[in-house]
Amino acid sequence: MTVAAGVTPDSELPPPPRLWRLRRRARALARVLTGVGFGGAVAVTAARAIVFDAFWPLPILAVFAPYAAMVSVLVALGALALRMRLTLLVALGLVVVHTLWMLPRLTADGGVQAGGTRLRVMTSNAYFGEASADRLTALVLRERVDVLAVEELTPALAAGLERTGLTRELPYLAGRAESGAAGLALYSRYPLTEDRLLPERTTMPMPGATVDVGGHRARIQGVHTIPPTRGRAGRWAHDLDAVRREAERRTMPAIFLGDFNATADNASFRSLTAAGLRDAYDERGSGLVRTWPMAHFHGLPALFAIDHVMVAGGIDVVSVSEHRVPRTDHAAVVAELSLR
Image (cartoon, rainbow, N blue to C red; front, top):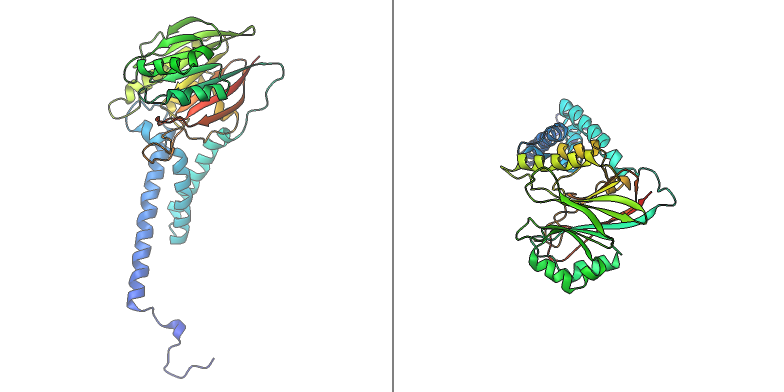
């Protein structure tokens, strides 16, 4: 193409002023968003890495770790496009760190040994006793549950569960109903013995008992800690520490189940795995499942896995699943276990 002398080719013309301003603003906005995402990802990663989380807001920040991993990927892409080299390097480092943290939760830990005795357990937080007794009982029957832990069990809900036939299916009881959020009870198909609360004083009572299934004895421990909100993080950490001590004291295979109000990204929760407890979801390679808040509750999506079934000793996890129960913000968690 021949260009007349003194004429500038279109490709070399500067962009129109309006387009240039739009590009500049878009780049500035991209820098701001990248910076905000970078700061948030760094803060959450630091909270996740800290081994002592009894101070607010560390427990709250740490549970966002899976989301910080995704944000770190977006930050890395933004930094690459904007040529922010230091931000890119740090963001890539965050991606690597979070990947290393998440991989063990996404890999099943071996198979199930043959010859074990099966036991199906379930935990459900009843949201101040508002959960549907009919649907809860129906779920127990459908899933052939042998042991059920109900957190936030109120006298009214306990009466509803009796009315709907739950106590005919699971006639043995440890723990009790209370008003508000303090009630916790274990319902069992098999006799429960040695029932007692945790020796350490906890914010809410946590009953436990021993069950014998075909000659296999196991300790069943209900769990319900206080949420780590502002002003309560210390009590929350104390509650989880009491659970940890109970796990360390165990003299037989054990099942800890309930609303831990903690995820695997909380240091206080990870102390439980250090004490020998194994999360059922992690055992089956489903460690990123979310149980709270459920989507039908105030229109919110489930964001975090705070309801758990954990095992220790000669117990294999065959399967684990979550189920919605009307009028509660928690998913019920059902696990099929094999006692050996």
